[in-house]
Image (spheres, rainbow, N blue to C red):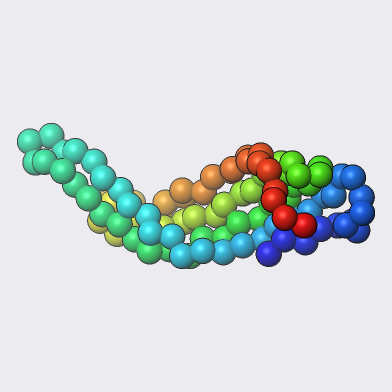
Length: 97
């Protein structure tokens, strides 16, 4: 979802963005003398951010929340949730009206 904060006729248009996705997180590593270790999990991920549209150019920053449960990677303290959240900064051209 993208919501512009000013009318279409303005030269610089700030906006807010909100989204969600089903993410397939995959972890792969090599274990000495044992070969390859792989595990994966499906996780709901959410994103929130904002940006500026300046004519056909858009610049945005988004924080993506992603906390998969990887039971096969559980450390000795028993926690099995990992923080794979990240920030994305993007710039691009917008085609269309």
